Image (cartoon, rainbow, N blue to C red; front, side, top):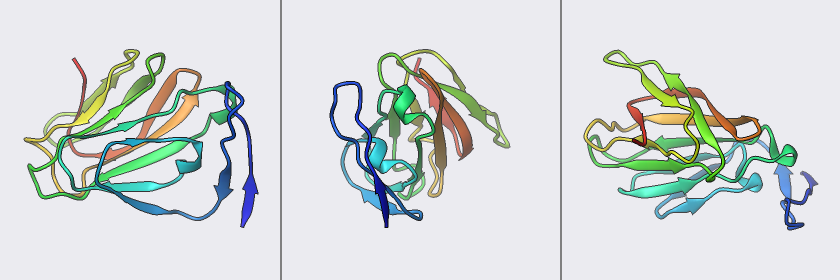
Length: 144
């Protein structure tokens, strides 16, 4: 397995293993880091938050996928960017598109009432301070 290491702005190691797709089941809040990039996270537990790392020049290209594996109408899943970052883009839906307006420090949420098993979102750090939705299914609302 290939492995390389970089440091964040505080000089802390952010080792990253180059690997195939890894799947991780989450049952509690999760703070993501560079080592989690490329993983698919399944969550069936209600009212949990994924906290995205701050985007820097050193970690552009990070990507994370979150999949709702809970029963329909059972889970609210929140993905929270760093206070200086935003979530941008949309997810096309039959009823109405889910749109993230790019407002700094606003979460993207898989709403509980409309959640379905299999709802998912993939976010990529495409630019400094900007996460982009590159794929998704379901109703994901921007925090008001």
